[in-house]
Length: 79
Image (cartoon, rainbow, N blue to C red; front, side):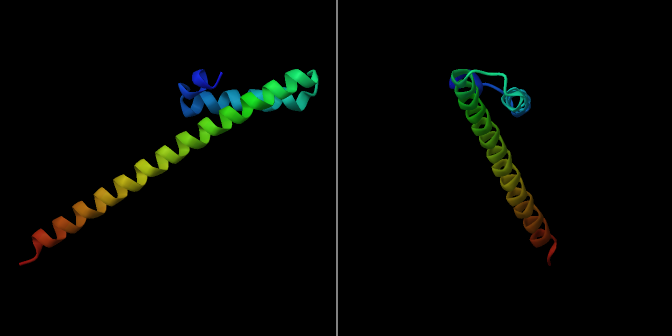
């Protein structure tokens, strides 16, 4: 189950997580179904968290690269 979730984009995982939460909130599941759905929801939440962390790291790296580029351009302009 977790292997297919790891292939989801953030948007896919988030949409699935929303569906999962709605189904759990409806309360029309057996205990076994609810536990299985809860487990899937936790895997989906982990996938969303991983995707957000990866995006945050990418933004931080872009900021560092941009700052370094600005600094080098500033230093190149100095006499």
